[in-house]
Length: 242
Image (cartoon, rainbow, N blue to C red):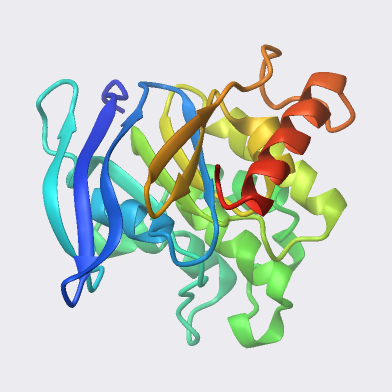
């Protein structure tokens, strides 16, 4: 894997000439997790999709650049809100989809280890219709973790999981994505307080940074600084980001 660059998105977006988000600058520091929170409809997922080079339905006026000057899109692994699993493919084949589409040989040892760590070994031969919502989300997470990309974009990757599994998968992702530049879009203040090296609250008017706890991530869910940061974020979200 090539070294993870910092990524900077600077600009504004509109839909049918109506502003989606005002001019802003979002910098993802190299090899760190940036958590982006905000109410529904402020453009968080649009920001994620713009960096991934995907269609958004919005008109973007601005720039997206990497600190090393290299193209961004080819270096991105992306996990959408919807799991986007192939219904006719097994769990194992869905997780290995990236390598198969590129015509590469699947790293079976890595695949088997990921399935074990997301607790899906016993479901490897099943089709998505045989899985629960939480299991499907873990398949999508494993597929993203299977990619060896320096920039990783995650859109609500743990939202369908129960509390215990969510905490476990947060810890797994933080371990396996160490050294990557990660953007996590989330509605969960506790998640951002636990995982963010940088935390930004997004509104239609722009971004407001919130200082994360100083402890190493992933932080303990019951740590006093984590709980204080969580409370600050929740208060800001309830006030509309002010």
